[in-house]
Figure 1: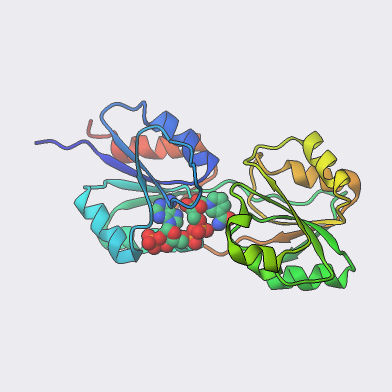
Figure 2 (figure 1 turned 90 degrees about the vertical axis):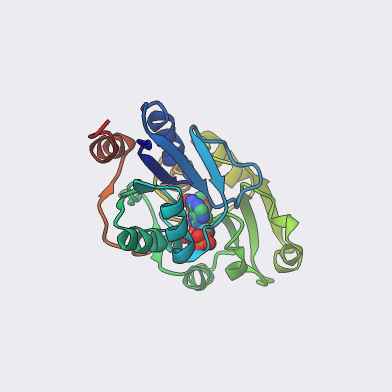
Length: 258
Ligand code: NAP
């Protein structure tokens, strides 16, 4: 019996949803998107969906073999380094083609005041050195711990899910205002948000893409410094920056024999 080629798409990004929509329309290919299951109500992608970790490299190898996966696209977030490393190891071991889809990083313009850091503790030291006390933390909810317990600082935190659900949050961030939201955001909204909360600087990671760019434009417009976490290094694998290139790769790897 001839099985359909099976593409595993490691998702959790806007790009992965867009790509899934196109790939699900290619007849004769089975598409499965995998999500880590971190957000409470994730959007449902086109095609099949599986949720949760695989259980390390060994678990991923087992999944690839059991589900007869033909090719993998790692379209996880630029900061999801562990998943990227594990996908590279598992695909090499199983002899399965792997493509990385990664949006280009942001870069500063002439009017931007960006400070690049490699870790969150460096970011904290930097803003304290600049004498900033009221910061917009746009880093999601899971990495806030590095900024907890700073009695002289106050925060505006934006996240998809409420960090207040974690009991450690209230004690670590007594001076925090929380806004919940999933991008894309508009520049007008972010200008209003930063001004209304008297923000002195923005702390974020270099996610790239359009959905989170508005805070950077707002910071530039208001003359605020931005502390930008640099992207982690990733395994050297074939990488494309847009969905169209990923679709062409799939057609070469999956559709040749259809
Ligand atoms: P990570 O540190 O690279 O991954 C940690 C573990 O989570 C992985 O080892 C894997 O568990 C599991 N995992 C991650 N992505 C998965 C996926 N797509 N399908 C199945 N399991 C997955 O990842 P993270 O930074 O925690 O991010 C988790 C997810 O959120 C990613 O899929 C990413 O695209 C998305 N996301 C991350 C960020 C960010 O800033 N980090 C921002 C937006 C969205 P096992 O080892 O058990 O397989």
